[in-house]
Length: 115
View 1 (cartoon, helix red, strand yellow):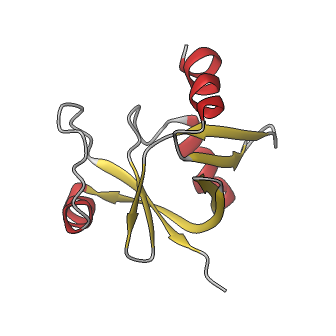
View 2: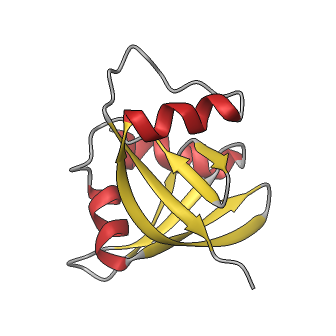
């Protein structure tokens, strides 16, 4: 339902950050709307459906992705899964709070590519 109904609407609205990644098997380009939390040197992402989600596995296999926020594209690299012990303090430093109800224990962190 998300892939076919909600995600296209969220992307079209322009209100959500959009992660662009390449399929690890198909080689197709995918765009996934999501929350992107800026942290020192990069971004943290909350894999709501777990670290085995297609988008997480695609990003890990490709070694990076691009992120569009408010019309600005950024390249991200060095994706890695991090535990709550590393992610929660990074969220709190920036004044953000990950969703507690979902009991997420792994987060995806990527570094911002700088010139």
